Image 1: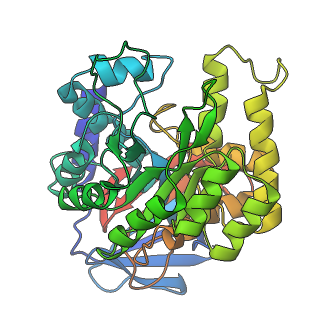
Image 2 (image 1 turned 180 degrees about the vertical axis):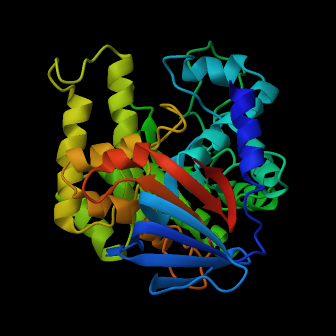
Length: 415
């Protein structure tokens, strides 16, 4: 079945050439900010040529009718792990220790295809979890046309404080592969430079982790250490993202100049106000938290909410109240690739309006991730476009019915 999916993707790519003019005619267009009735979009040479009411097809242009659909920017997944697959299939430890890099790359090639077919034309991948720079290789394979997939922003192995990360539990003297690259104050600058040299687009640091006396999350790097990583990355034009789930870890990372906080589980009103004041975005990863709980036996709708899920509800509300920019990023890989919209469903369940969630997955993520060439339906931007059946501003379930995907002006899916 997966071989047939790949063949259909490759066949669909012949439906339009990036150099041809193509007029897309849906029922409505979500431009990344607002919904518009009666718009059409003209695409040519990999970019959007025109968008708006009254756009006509020039002589010789192809016309693609998309009845009953909403055309929108290709969605942007803000927090993913293409080298991971759900932990109810294989535990994180076993993926890191037992699966070969070759197996993991083969899996990743399928993961990126599923994500593209689900309407996500860009992904930020925040750590290979023991697979080194395999994400850089997958990105290059996509760019060369070896495998279909979204445009990738990759972080390589991510950076952790010595002694804090896993796999753990082995006797002293036993050395095992780790899920990230260790560094300390004297090494951070070198490690950041090394990762840049190996092709990362974004540097990810762990501002805290579960290394407290009783296994609880505690801060790892000092504020000055994180600041040195941020300054080094910035000198090459790259941003730094921070895994942070404690108030102090979040505070240190924000003060040090990171551009996004991942998870934010233990955030306080004070920390969220600091994030809002300094323009640091939050990727709350709601779907990962709920997936962890369900793997542990929680039956949503039947059982009381576990504390971790209840905490997510509280901190999500705090962040919104404080005015924090909230991006769409679910930590996909903890759950199935291609089900990226699970995070969007939960963002509505946790208090957002559907139109806000659509913005989060398009224009907001484009702004946060510093991608001015996408995330909106606007002349001059990349023709990364998706059509879904129905109106997702009324019902996000429409996002599960992707009828059309275009990447760089080339149709890669059309039903």
